[in-house]
Length: 270
Image 1 (tube, one colour):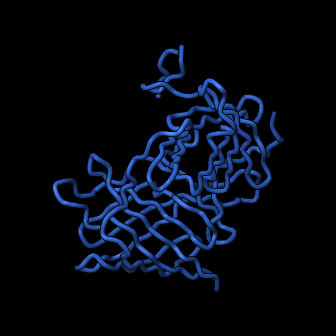
Image 2 (cartoon, one colour; image 1 turned 180 degrees about the horizontal axis):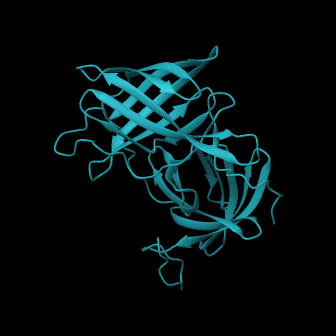
């Protein structure tokens, strides 16, 4: 059913060369402005950070939820990692603070959770921010705005994969990890967001989704994890093979009905 593991927290994405930054999304960021009026930082931001002689082209996507809470996702174009979510942060009109989780090997098989803050000052026109990323050192990082509003993906006719899917990874005896995929079709292609309540992240954006409705097969890349599977004939199940560097698991997903439960089940506490 699965390859042996070493008991480490595996939901992670390689970032800043050998340093690990977790693909986790917790609660939305606070201190954002709400409607009416667009959030002043909403949109896309482009920057380059040099770490020990290696340049990383970064893109920061800032948006707000319908409740007016700020959210931020980070892409590393050089490492081909998309949708790294900030866990929390704030913006007071001129000063932005974001925090990202990363994992550091403490000399054992267990990775130690740490936080990498990014603090920046935003200019009066909200077109540029200059700041510092702190992660095993301090690294200057400035962003320039490339768009003035967050991109809204217009919905498209649903595919057979659209919907919410819940699966369980049997990582080792007595230890399971729950995954929930939220898949929806847009004019820009199929989008997939990944939740993992056990590892306390929510809404990790898949960097790539490909599918074939005729063969009922789908492939989803989220961070360093790749899920490849096939939907059942009745459309209620999705059997996948999930691979990460050094790991391989078979994960069965069931389609969730509206309200978050699988057919015939009582609602599950969340």
